[in-house]
Length: 241
Image 1: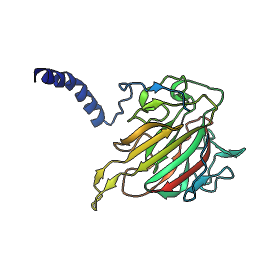
Image 2 (image 1 turned 30 degrees about the horizontal axis):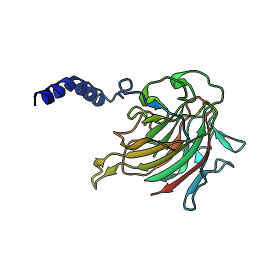
Image 3 (image 1 turned 180 degrees about the vertical axis):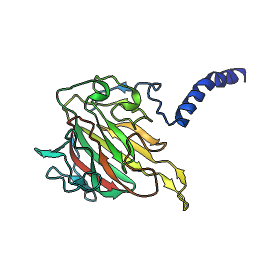
Image 4 (image 1 turned 90 degrees about the vertical axis):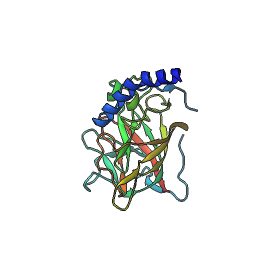
């Protein structure tokens, strides 16, 4: 009993600090443990019941927020983020989904930390799974590739080398609300990065930074972030659950 009391007492300042950060709405970016770096073991054709959002031909399934034509480019079968053009969002909105997408950060790294190969995929335009060149690139854990940005670091750093194609396979369940629109449970994400489990049914505590819409019982689009880096995408499809 004495040892148990001491352990709880010793943790109290740490728990209090984390609580204060959460109450202030500030992500606790620096205090998490860095994920172990591993070497991941290419692409996946969509199943017959999938909705294909990008097949390498055009951006007909995408637009800018607000409905204007998407400002990104299609080159040699891939979607290329164009600096200054802002994000692209899917024209279709979704609830619970399985998502597959492939991405590649620039072959020649420029910058460091958050300035290197930065983009992101937002589920329902609310919750970001970070895209970043995290191959031998130090940054804070909750901002690494595969992080639920500002909240959950990836369990492992499964990044390939710059320029190599990588994949995300995501199972997303939206937040739940009662008949009075009160939230009863948070959204959850399970994420595989290059086939490696990096988020295991992680619960999201509210929207992440730069979300396009507030939490609510409504469906939402897929949103790909323009963070100033020419990140490429291909083979994007979803299955509604």
